[in-house]
Image 1 (tube, rainbow, N blue to C red):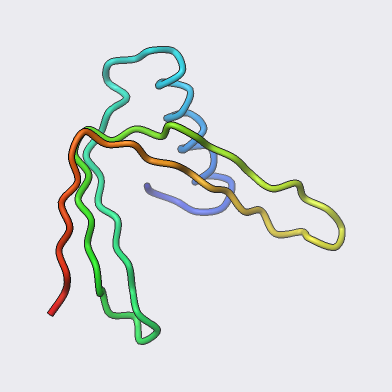
Image 2 (image 1 turned 90 degrees about the vertical axis):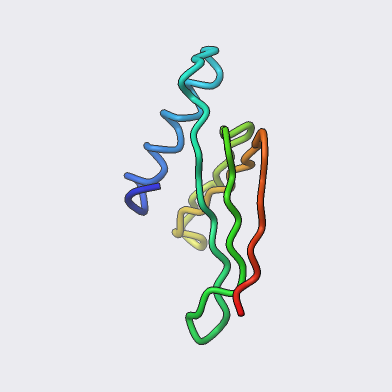
Length: 84
């Protein structure tokens, strides 16, 4: 995903809408990285033919003004690489 904040959410929302509309081009290859506290990559997931099957956001309030969103990715195939 390119971007963050509302631009990232717009990207995810548009991608999810393509899936809901039945677009055959909605499936994409994606890479997900997990970092340790020092900022080094510890896990790398490569997803083949992935699509967002679920997208949710929190409700913004005066006491919780930060926008958070969760995306569930479903993929045809996933490979995992553990960093040395």
